[in-house]
Structure formats: C-alpha cells, structure tokens
Image 1 (cartoon, rainbow, N blue to C red):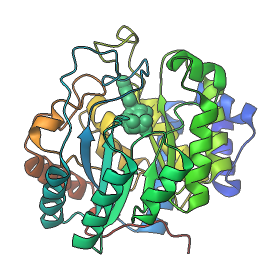
Image 2: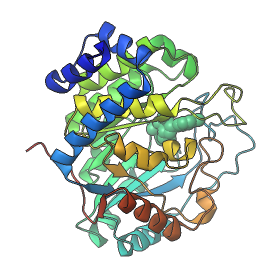
Image 3: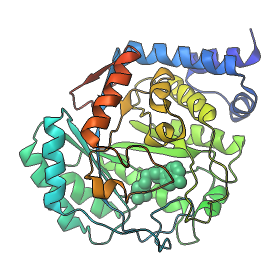
Image 4: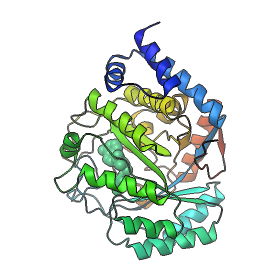
Length: 349
Ligand code: SAH
C-alpha cells in the first residue's frame, strides 16, 4: 500500500492528520490516490446521507459591495460591473418560485451592500419565514457586527455561510486590502457559531500565492471550528480584477480536498459548488462522487444572474434557471443519486 493510501485510511479512522502529513498528502497525491480518497469519501456520504442530495435555492440579492477583495468580480473597484439590487419583493418572488420548484432552503447571498441594513434584512427574513414556515433561510452577506448577526438570527435566519478564504494571515493580506483582516473574519465566524447559526466556512483552492502548507492550515482551521457546512471551490480569474492573469485553481485538487474534508467531517454539509461546475463541465457531479452532498442551483432572476459575476464564465449565468435546475437534477440522477425536497439541516445522530 502506498504511503498516501495509508494516510487517507488514517484520516478516515482518526479524523485528522498532522500538518506535515497533510502537506505531504496534498503535494504528492497521484490520480489513483485521488480515486481512492473519493471512493472512501463517497462511502462515508452514502452511509450518513444515503444517496440523497440536498438542493438549496441560491438568490443573489445584490452585487453592490463596499469591499475590494482582489479576486472577486464584484469588488468595489470594478467600475465595469453593472450594479443591481433586488428589492425585498423580488426576493420573495424568487422564494415563491423556488418553493414551487421544490426548494426548502433559500440562500440569500450578496456583496457587502450597506443598503441592506439590519432592519431591512430582518423584515425580509420575517416575511420569508412567515410565508414559508418549513423552509430554512441561509445568509451569505459577509462580515457584520455581532449585534447584527444576532438581530438576523432572532428574525429567523437559520444558517450563515462565510468562507474564511485562507487561514494564513500573510496569505489573507495578499488576497485583500489592508483594512480587511483575517482577525475580523474569524471573529465573525466565532460570533456566528456562538449565536447558534448552522455556520459554514471554507476557502478557494488554487487562489494566487497559495501553497500546500496553507491548504493544510485551512483543513486544520476547519477542524478547529467544527462548522456545520464547508464550501470550497477552485479560484477562477475575473478579467476586471488585479488577479486577472493568475491561473485558475485545479479541479483535481478541489475534488481531492472535498474527499479529505468529507473524511475529516463525516456529517458536514458539503456543496459541490458553482465554481467547480464552471471549471469543469461535469464538476458538480464529480464533486458528489468525491463526497459532496449539497448543490446550490441559482434561482435569481436572469438580470441578476448575469450581473453577479464573481469570476468569468460562471455557469448558470445565462440559462433559464428552471431548465438548468432540471438538467442538473437529471445529471445527478444519472450518477445514481436522488435530489430531495428537504430542509437538509445538519444532524449528528
Ligand atoms: N460577500 C459575501 C459573499 C461572497 S461571494 C462574503 O463575503 O462572504 C462567495 C464566495 O465566492 C467568496 O467567499 C469567495 O470564496 C468566492 N469567490 C469570490 N471570487 C471568486 C473567484 N474569482 N473565484 C472563485 N471563487 C470566488
């Protein structure tokens, strides 16, 4: 048995490895090792979730952003971005449409748009929960104060996605301007967990300047936070950002990391992300076969989808959302999985 297989087996058994072991595994795995990790991770997912895949309806509520992340297409300095903001009524319409299509979780994601005050957001969350009482509401609105997170939680929000982006403060500085700090990002994650949100962290794979040691740190950071959700996807350059000339992150690395994450966190809600589906034609199906159990189809109106461009050539950005949902469902069924109409909460039993 190769050393890497032995490491993968131990990761499954013990749920962790040392930093040096993780670095060795990430920097030397072969395609056979990746297939092996995927088969182990898939078996874990099947044991915990059966062949069921949870769908979340993603609504991109605004591409106004006060931040300036160097990788992101909706950063404030991108003067070419056509800005838009959905109204609360537009968002409720998306939920109505999504509910009919079988979604029981709505994910409201956006840039850090000051128009969305706590009051406006809390009012919207209450309206969604009043109309769709059996649905979960997930927020992904970036960094806010603890008080703000508490207000939105009290209004009925169930979950919050906030990728930590990179667990290494020096790498964080290379991806963000000085005023955005890893310290505040981690403060936010701790507050969210403390308040009682089902919380998601995560990172890009292959972001500029990233090393295997930093990816290992990301895995260790995830283990320490013990989040309910983990989102990872390959970095994809956007033509109007400072990182336009950097190469995209590797799909293989992303798939391998998905498998390692599944082995480390058997119960975690792990999406096969849009970025993975953009980087490779059947990326989301491959993600499921590597251990993912969640897919987040875009249910934003067409005008919003084509403007919420975090990176170039984002999938789902142009096609009709009902049609792309059905196509995705068929593809998932073709690999032997079933899409379920379920809130899909985190469970440990
Ligand atoms: N404003 C929110 C939502 C950000 S968009 C927040 O700060 O959390 C969601 C995720 O998309 C980000 O966390 C980032 O990891 C990812 N992303 C942004 N630009 C990207 C790019 N160029 N390639 C791949 N993923 C990207």
